[in-house]
Image (tube, rainbow, N blue to C red):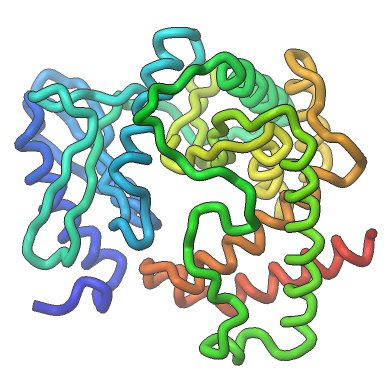
Length: 333
């Protein structure tokens, strides 16, 4: 049998589907169809039941590149709290037969056990396909409401997620300046990344030295992790939860506006929506931009190690684009 990591994206998805079918044996769901939605990172499958109900099943990346069981269980705890305490649009975890919100499955051909979770289905297009200025305002308000709830959320002692005190908060090995990747980082480019890392980490250190205390953040609230359902926005994919500050969370969202021609207008609309509910959490001009650059550096480091063959094929393009953004940011002061 061909090694899993040597397969194409399609080949990997086929094996993950078999694993998803094993995980579904733990659920009382009369599923009659399992369809792949994406295998860009996690394996995401749509489940259709005999009664016409729909659900989503997520097969997470393995422990060395994905999230731990404790972190995924913590994700479920906050999702349940959001459903209990608010009317926000978020997807809801579905318990297995024994009451667990996370199951673990293993099949031949997939080298590691994978943690799996089932969620309520959120219909509608991704926000990326409906990214008007009006919806960007709604996204800002959604972000603010998540921060409001996070400010009152009292997690149990079992709650375990990372804290965003580093440019690389997920704990991945920092490899982007290793000799193995010297061909991607000639001296001039390497110096750009070194200087940017110093500046970004200094800003993060200053934030945590004087801030009032971090709160739970979605930390991946971008237009592909939001659905538009009859003009209401629903947040999905809470897997990257992080302790941190609202400015860091907003920086992640704004990172994904950079490539768009109307990016500045979308940023302004997001801010209008956010400040309808909360004060803008920037202590000085350019602070959020600094954390946005940090997101870009972290993604470069991640993609260098990403198991997805499609991403690995685009790594040179990604590194070059990141360098250009870092140069522009530093030259702007």
